[in-house]
Image (cartoon, rainbow, N blue to C red; front, side):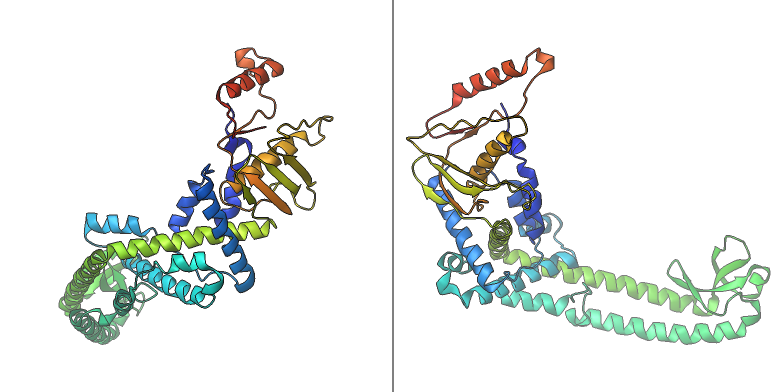
Length: 406
């Protein structure tokens, strides 16, 4: 039996919606998107969509920023007890987004009660955001202010590096006749001099490397060995303190994991709604009027995957009195496109997306069954006609009174 999502190329529809999404969970919702046959669920989806389309049309895009999957981050935090600076920063960005969304929507909340209800679910995490901002910069640098210990270590590093710079400058001048270059360089984290190999015994110190040509030997002068080691030790302390800070921030985040995941879910829901609304506006779609009866009433419906400058629109009507429509015509006359247009309109509607038509009224179908195209199976020795009969026979065994058959 044919798969409706494959036959109607629904993945291509998803590909067109995907660029509008900002959140990791929103993309997950899109990947899992399938039609619903619940009238109540679909009614709510379409009412949300209407509000989303109107809000974006009148007031512009929602203030959404890139958002990670908080549930994934929380699970990672529980396993490792430590999140990266980027992970923690993104949790802070989620808080910033939730505040921006609340502020944006609250100004016009009376016009959009359904979306207002969603933003009312946001939890106040402003204190956590302040702490994240105190610790991590937008460039993901751990700030000196993150702890007194980190500030002190970095002060000592800077002091030692300044002293080292002065010493290496003095040493370079004293050994200048033995050097290929007066500028010191780094090897394995140590400041070394590029000594001419022929004079390597003239500069007492530790050899760290030799150039590919063999003409230069990189030596750490004995006068700065202790200072280099001191700086290396301080930098190890710096990394240990940063790790301690990130671990403490992770613990703080875990204390508020439910609120973080809650806000992340609302952001994803609004992001997904926004993406569907933008796509619906782009295809100049109409949010279908739902009917509890089995009905397909499409005025000037278009296939959304055909160039809109070339596509031919058509109107279709079926109801419980007029349950069957037969389309006939020559090859390449548009019969298959017509069938796919009707099916895709019904599928889009039951996925909570506007229909590419100037007006639509649709029932809620339990299933869509299809037998479209040439299903000839040479491996089974079936002719085109036999393949169609086999397919229709399978459908007849399953089809019910609230199904759509194409």
